[in-house]
Amino acid sequence: MPAPNTLTIGGDLPVHRLGFGAMRLHGDTPQRRAESVAIARRAVELGITLIDTADAYDLGGNEELLAEALHPYWEGVVVATKAGQCRPGGAWVPLGRPEYLRQQCELSLRRLRLERIELFQLHRIDPTVPLPDQIGALKRLQEEGKVRHVGLSEVSVEQLAEASRITAIASVQNRYNLTDRRSEPVLDHCERRGIAFLPWLPIAPTTRSGGDLVDTVAAGLGATRAQVALAWLLRRSPVMLPIPGTSSREHLEQNRAAADLELSDSDFSALDSLADRGAVKR
Image (cartoon, rainbow, N blue to C red; front, top):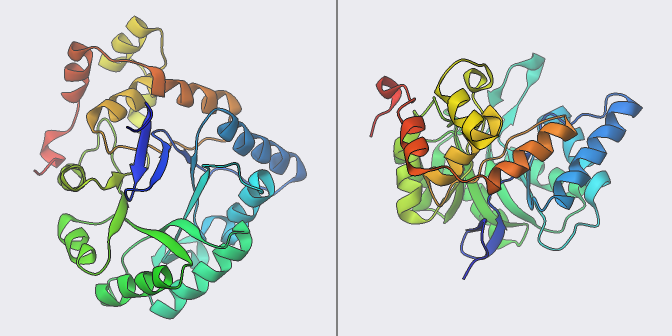
């Protein structure tokens, strides 16, 4: 039996159900780097075992920062990374050529000081490259022992099904939160198949402001609005694994505490009604 608040990725990789998105950690100044390193270490001290990064964050600098903070890695800590998107001139551009994905995997292994990446995710599907070529490149990295599990990001049900015919897909990372549920069909598909669902932007900007039902629920629980949003996600599905990011130690600790927050049935149902149902397609 899995431990409470644990989700097993790919059938053999148990992690805490609340992860940490490292994108907002930076090392552009010595002071900021020291604080970012301390936050990454604090996340692990709090029991968070999945840290999400990408090759494109700070042009690989985010991966290097995590290795500085966490290597040698504690037992059970998983650093998941992504490749398949670059930022020429600051704009995000999908880049899924097989040789590029291989190159970026090799660079991530070096920066993270790993022999194998436990969860390697395709950051975006490149519409200019056949999907079988992109997934095939990740499958070959698996066969070579450089990648344990393959994940996808921002995909449709149809794309997920096509990729799953090539290799097992262990996780999906789509935008999803209390008010933006356009990926509801993908989440439902993942739940039926036991695929971990890592919502990015799990705390919607609108959830942070005051004056609505979230305030009422938060006040009744003695919690913050962000904690309520995360608690709702965790209850929404057993395959949910939010990865909230922050550059604040205080917010990190508050987010982690959300995993222990229990919503009543009535609070959960009321919060469920907040979705823009016009954007939800089942």
